[in-house]
Amino acid sequence: MSDKLIELIHVYKDFIVRKGVFGKEHRPGIWDVNMNIRKNEIVGMVGGSGGGKTVIAWMIVGLLKPTKGSIIYTPMGLDVTKADKKQLKQYRADVQLVFQDPYSSLDPAHTVKWHIEDR
Image (cartoon, rainbow, N blue to C red; front, top):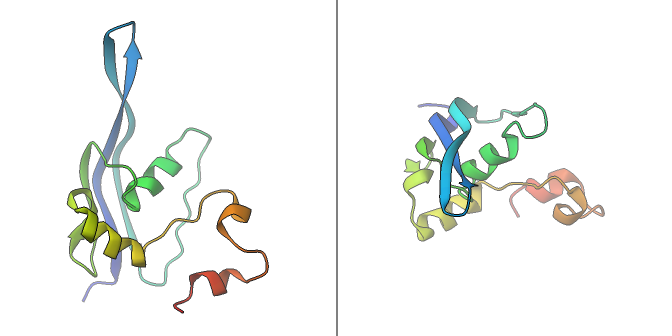
């Protein structure tokens, strides 16, 4: 049995940028990301501003679709990039994102453990 929870396989994300009045072009934002997140593992993404950390996190939780590649949630055997709304709802019961502003995401009256443990 694998201890992988989430696997990113050759994940790319292009962004469409306006060029002139009617033109547009695709610009690469994230390219060829491969990553495994395992059970009981803490993963940190470090990099400069604009480096793609937030885009990767949004793709992992299904808020943004990659241009290509797969994001596999192994406990459900689910490719998040191809999931429908019902599947994403089930997936998000297990996988969530804490946004950068901790006061809008976390209640300072409780510990972080309180926020993440099953209740």
